Length: 91
View 1: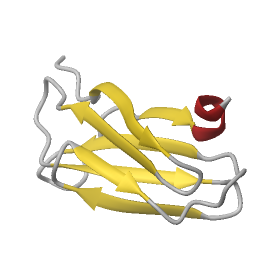
View 2: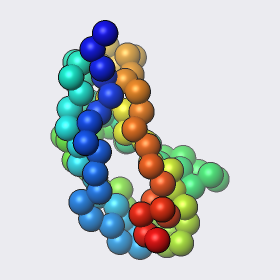
View 3: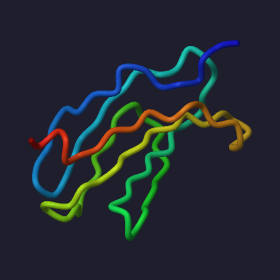
View 4: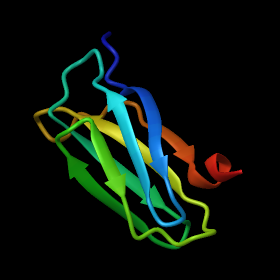
């Protein structure tokens, strides 16, 4: 089967309160991307149609798990998530 996982997820900019990401579209079909971030106590997400996004209003010093998932046009088929932890990047 064709992979629906976003590729080449990378951080383009990181500050204490924001993180900017970009990625390459999956080999399979995708109509938009769901970006989710959590610090353990609260989880937020947004849908983006571009292959780049900036997550802002992050709390300095908190550890965030960030996940990017490609979503197909039916709004249900989700690709494999790509995730990483913001704190690891700051060290």
